[in-house]
Length: 281
Image (cartoon, rainbow, N blue to C red; front, top):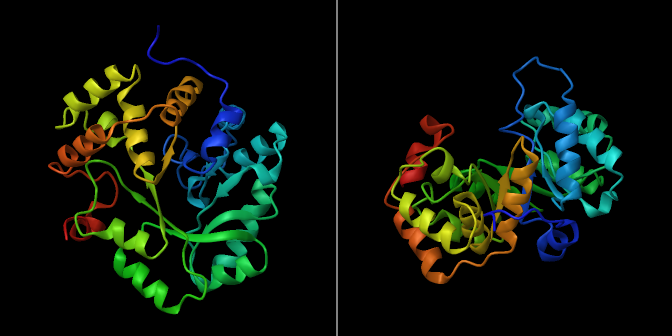
């Protein structure tokens, strides 16, 4: 029996939770500034992801992949209400409405399910262009400032979060106390970017015990800790692999071991010079 068994999980994933495991169109597909080349491979893999039940699609203006995702959604023919589409913009407040309209046009959509920024975003939600609004890469001080003036608080904060970057400052519990869902990007860092870190042996042992891979164990750790896991790949077979995270159940001892051992090592992949103090506070 192979470690990963391909499966038709379109309905299974939807039944479990269509939002907890997201297919990201960033890291693996990110385009350099000025690159407007259309990538048919991304269209096909996004369609494959949808067909396998990845109904949460994570996008961003800065990725440069909105056109491809829009074509994939249209070609697949999946009902819009079935999908949960997250998009992020990084414009100044005055530019937000125009940026949103441009993204909607590129993706051939009428609205997004999640968007980023604030007062301007609240207006966009009122206008029906976003069903819910959230933020990305916000520190606690950023969120505190937003909450002070928000009439419609953020529902989610997408941050770099994994076993080697758990935030030691009570940030995650604080967000949950305020009704803010945590979403993780770079969640597979202990397996792919720090394969020889202190979790090497525990992850290998747990993967063997569950007849799966270290990556699946890490995704399960995130999801069983009520964190939305955003992951990406250019390989169709990885979609089947990662979907296994919705089927395995780590015991509490495994969950605690990943948390405790992971906390002994600190590693950030993105914008360390900006967030380092926040990570360790």
